[in-house]
Structure formats: C-alpha cells, structure tokens
Image 1: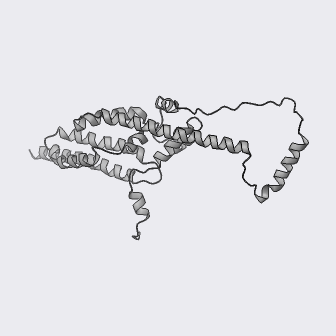
Image 2: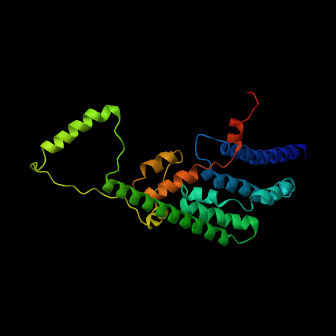
Image 3: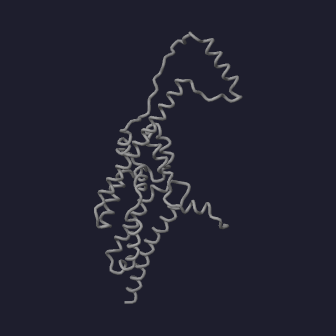
Length: 251
C-alpha cells in the first residue's frame, strides 16, 4: 500500500514538473532578444494547452490545473494575429502549423475557430497587398530619378575616378567591342502571386536554421514578402527583454 502511494506521488510530481518545465522554457524563449520570438509563440502555446488537455483526463491532476486553465483561457483564448502571421512567415512552420494549431485549439476551447483562421489569411493578404503597392511605388520613384539624372554628389575620393570615367566614355564613344552585346538580366518574381508561391512551399527545413538569414537569401525570389517578413519578425513576443534593457536596477 505504501509502495503504491509512493509511486502515485512520484507520478503526480513528474507530470507537474513536465507542465512547469514547458512554462519555464516558453518564458525563457519569449524573453530572448537575439532571435525572432514571435514565430515561436504558437508552438509553445500549443505544448501548454496539449498538456492541459492531458491533465483533464486524470481525476487528480485535473483539479490541480483547473485554475491554471481558467487563467490560460483568460489571457490566451484570443491573441494577436501577428503570432499566427509570424508562424506562417517561418518556413519551418507555414500553413500546416496554422491548420494543426487551430484544429487542436478548437477542441481545447470547445468552440469553432474557423473565423480566426480566415481572419489570419485575410489579414496577411491585405498586408502583402499594402507592401506590394509600396514596392511598386518605390521602384517607380527610382525609375524617374534614373531618367532625370538625379544622382548623389560624389565624395572627394571619387572626383578623380569620375573624371577618368568621363574621359574614357568620351574617348570610346561610337566604338564597339567585338562580341559585345546586351545581356538581359533576370527580374525577381514580383507580383501578387508571390505570396501564393510561398504558401505552397513544400520544402522541409531544419529546426536550427537561421530564419533571418533565410529571408535575406530569399529576398530576390520574394522581394515584397521578405520586406513584410522583416517587419513582422522584428516584433518580439514579450517586452521583458526591452524592460530589462532600460531597467534602472543595478546588476
């Protein structure tokens, strides 16, 4: 009888430790400042409510997490769309993560989450359209400036180089070089289908990949979406790091 009681107590504390460990890891990860934290919000929240669902089926454990579940729903039943958009802009997660999360979250809440999912993709499309218009406008400005000859004033160290270049152009004006021909440059894929191409991305990525480096290297393929990702991923999941940086307390 005593042995069984010890086993029961050991099982109870093991389960409690598992739940508290997830809270510890999520708090630590959300407070980071050297990596994007908004994309990791959904995976950690998913782990937490999955563990709460597991505790519901246990007669002893469900009483322990009853108040915790109420607090969880109070603060996280509705959360910012930014976390879901950030997860989509993480190629390790994408739309598959959103579908999985909201399907399971619907069971946890006991309510339909289709409206939330629709709102996520609608908002993402609106954001992309906004960035697309700004991208086109900026390219038009660059084109006008190049046509009107608007240039930056050369620095003092470029004076001789500019003079030499002008002299070379004047000397070689009218001459042609054997084999010289214009080579058309490949243009980046910039249109309203850019988002759809990314959402259909079926490539698998390692968990330890550098998200910011990936978007940097993919900026030519996704010029508009990479600009959107840069701004979204800059938003941190927690303000703890910012508060610590400006805290007047001595270390």
